[in-house]
Length: 219
Image (cartoon, rainbow, N blue to C red; front, side, top):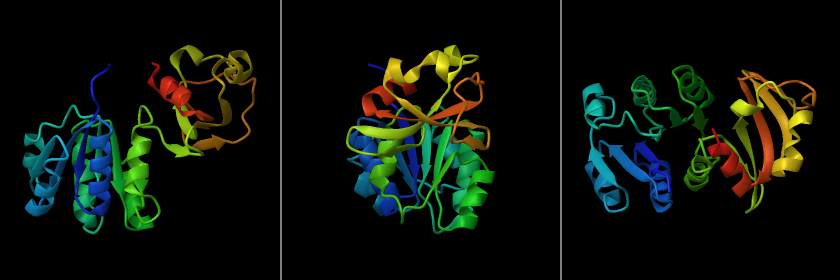
């Protein structure tokens, strides 16, 4: 068994609580941080660490010791300034994946500009679904199509670089269907089966959850 994934959740509104509790139930190490002591106390027995702190205080964030965590969830929505500040600070600390809650399209655009890897609108997506997506290996976006099948983003593996879809024959080897290839900001929904993969390519694939999880964990 590998080491447990570690997440920190900032902001314990309905969204933050739901994500934190679901991640904890899934076996992850979870730290929650909020300036409201009552909200922190309510989750203290559910998560690994529960801390009352000013999330916009850089020194307070440094003291949490979260630099080596796998991901951060910014559940602060109403206070746009605090949301943006925490996003900047945790990215500067080197946390590899930051998912932030947005209240508006403008808020979402700013969050992406300052480094958020993903932005969600909780009115449209439940905290439980987001937590499940986080568990889908390497934090790639995933969309459940059924209880056993999903569509997700999958970074091109090192051994696939320079080979084409036709050469790799991923459908036969892994029973997955490649429905698109994203390179930087361009999505090709009808990829050329003879085009060699490049290091920046990300595949949009559909397959069984256990297969996708296994592929996502491959280096």
